Length: 259
Image (cartoon, rainbow, N blue to C red; front, side, top):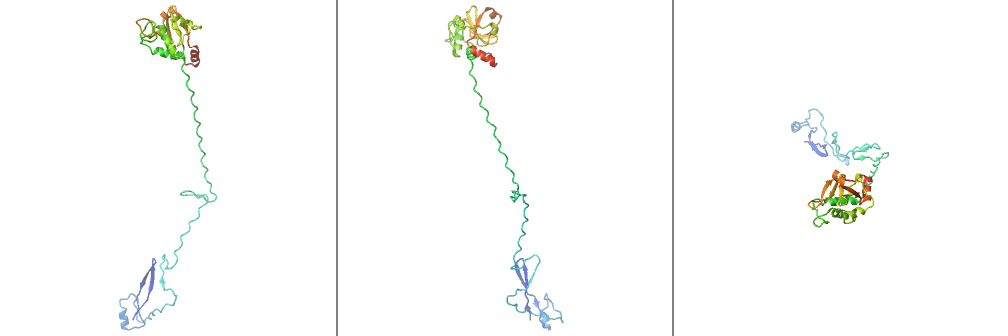
């Protein structure tokens, strides 16, 4: 007769029970025959293995300990505590913040450059410049004796309307226009905007740029620009400057330009 002998195997927390046959002290052939093929053979003449007695109350069953595996009921080994970070070191996400850590100082705020001062408004165009521009815009208009713009111009009517558009009122005819200004201008001192008179004050034109004038010449012609050539120089009677302040300011500023 055999008795089970319990061997407890604890593998990965699961209990596996093995019950190999254990031979009694009986050495009869029957007993030997019952053990044939057993994984625990008994040799004749050896002392039989005594059957296991009842386990004492409270005693733990014998167990087989496998290295690397914890026995059932025992506490799992506590994970190793991380090594303390060195004060002042930086981790994957920045400075550890441990005592002694030197925090980087914030970058100084960038000062914005002051806004540029607004540009001063451009001074208004002087009267002489406006008058020259107006007269030049009438090029191609027919000459009409006594005309001041209704279908054409005569010489004095053209300069009258030109300076009128610039805010300076002139007399109607050439003699009065010349005498309206006490200061006379020499040929060598002519500037754009000056009124130039010829043939004993019978004709007037306006200097458009150095060496040239815009005028309404005579019947059958049109308002146009002519050169102040030797022939005009020979018939020159005098000149006046309706906008002396404007011309002077332009000369001083270096902005005197041709019309």
